[in-house]
Length: 458
Image 1 (cartoon, helix red, strand yellow):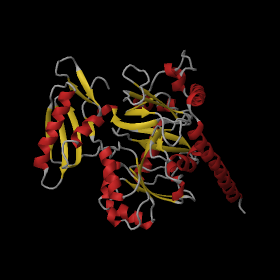
Image 2 (spheres, one colour):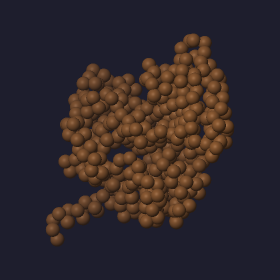
Image 3 (cartoon, rainbow, N blue to C red):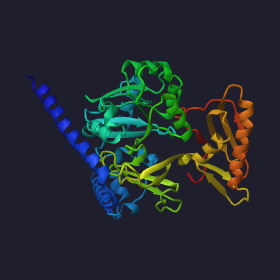
Image 4 (tube, one colour):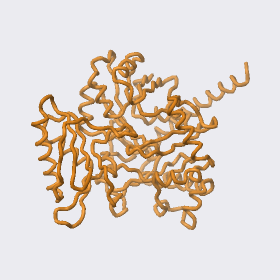
């Protein structure tokens, strides 16, 4: 037998053993890591990451020069722009930024995503909801362990094994492909695939799990009657899943719906057996801060969200600012000691900022509050998008029941004016138009609540 065949066989055996160990460990941590034990675990992992970054990344060596390395809370924060401005010095393998971008772009242009850079690294380009591109690097050895992570943390019950998954996203890469394994059949489709073709693929593989962004899930749901074998589970990601979207999707498919909070910065949150979204506290250290930079109390919206990815040493993300705004809670019937993500409010870039009626400055409004006032205006709205284009101008795009726009538009406008009044805002001009929501041109993601002008707080 050729030596390369023997080598691949032993590698496969090693991955199986490693996967079983990873699965058991991830399940144990989620159940038993809590309180002071969890705090100590996170602090030790963060300190190891900081020391590794200082030793191997010129960027962090300079950034942390003269600063105490044993207290994460005093270290500077970073964001996507900072990372991308210094990426060649940021990563710990000395990889050239332009080479990585060229490699990733070549895969996107050819739609052939299943390659490793230098046979060792998984390279991806993230757009984020705003469309600002960022590089995502993962060691091949780490990416090959993703099937165990998916089994342990996806929230998909093991009773559905073997999983037959239709996975829909704008981009694909080798890390996602590695999830495909003897127990997991993963069929990737681009997010711009026609819905009729998606339904055909669901039927062709007899899929039992459908993974897609909420806006696309709703479109597929409109043709759910064409799916021959009922789906057993739905999983949403990439966009904020509002209560209205969740209700429509579950009704369309007649299947349970869970969320996966997967960012390019790591697997931040995943659903438990009770269907609630938990922070993966052993994989990321999440800091949800209030307007004063202190930990936001449970049940209260945060004003800044920082993540430290505890396991990716190739691209160390330490106190990296996410755009998302969350409400975190504690306690869940599943028994996990990991915090619950009660709500994803939207992106901090999409906070509405309006002049206060008393002239004392500007008042912010969280995206979920604005969305609630639109949906509560009447029962005629089927799709919507609210965009603040200036301090004094808001555009509402509405899709209503047939021939009911003229009736719905003034009700939505009145409810938004009521919202602004209740929060002491100077009334902007509200323009309601009969149009479908517009996807972000770069990311092809839906932002139901969006702000398209800059505010000094950003």
